Length: 149
Image 1: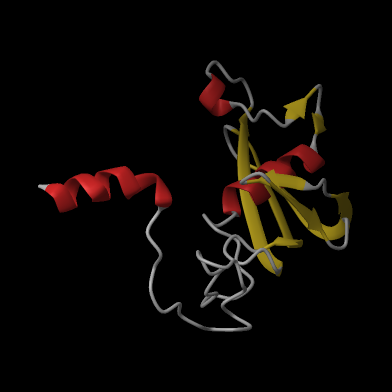
Image 2: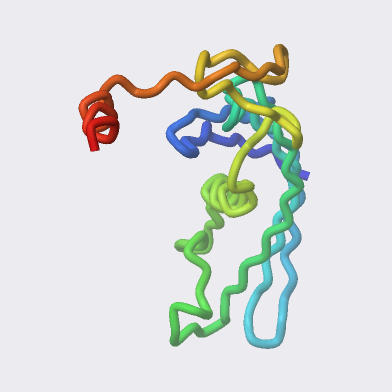
């Protein structure tokens, strides 16, 4: 069992912070006939704004990542980018594995209603509808033309 320090993430223009910043991880190194297989397992919890309502969102990500390094690699596909001079960069590997596991949208809850497009209120706290949409005043000249035709 190792302790890994995780950096904060910028995702969709928002900042997501791992809590706690240091997580327990399990690294397994398996010798294969043609090289070495590395497996990294951890669980990360990210906190940041919800994509729809901008409220607090927490996301738990179970991570299981695998990398392969050939004994005598002649191709970049047989080489892991996290191994340099017989040192494995676990922090970068964990960061990249978490980034690949992120969903398209981080939400406070799966059924988040978001913000009202008219008044900006949080629809999770105050679900409502507005009576009639007011026309955009920039279209008034075209509206007048339509009425004259």
